[in-house]
Image (cartoon, rainbow, N blue to C red; front, side, top):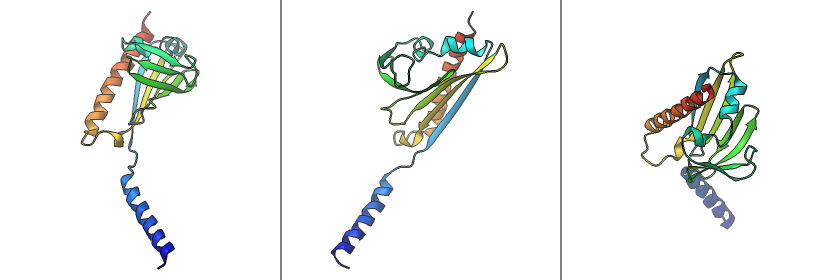
Length: 162
C-alpha cells in the first residue's frame, strides 16, 4: 500500500475513533397540562407575556435584547438565566436556553376547551445525555417535572384569579 493508501486507512481509523467520542442525543419530553376555569383569550392575556414568568416565580425577568414579545427577544430570569424567544403564535410561545449544555427548550400554550374553559400546556424538552456523568436521569426528570408542575399550577391560579 502506498503513501495515499496509508493516509486513507489512517483517516478512516481516526473517523472511527472520533465517532466513538461523539455522544448521541437522548431527548426527554415532559408534557404538562392544566385545565383552567377561564376562556382561552382571558387565560392567554394573563399568562402569555414572555416575561410573565417573573410574576409566577416571584423573581425578576427583564428583556435584555430585542422587542419584548417578538421572536428573537432575550429574557433574563433571576439575573442569571438567559432564554431566547424562538417561536410565537396567537396563544403560544417557545423559548430556548442557548448556552445550556442540555439543549433546553420549553413551550407555553393555551388551547380553548369550551366557551368558558381552556387548558394550559407546558412542554419541556432537553437532552439528558448532556447531564453530568453519574447523574440519575430518573431523578432529574422527576425533579424537573415537579418544578414545572408547580409553575403550571401557579399559571392556572393566575389565569383563574378574578
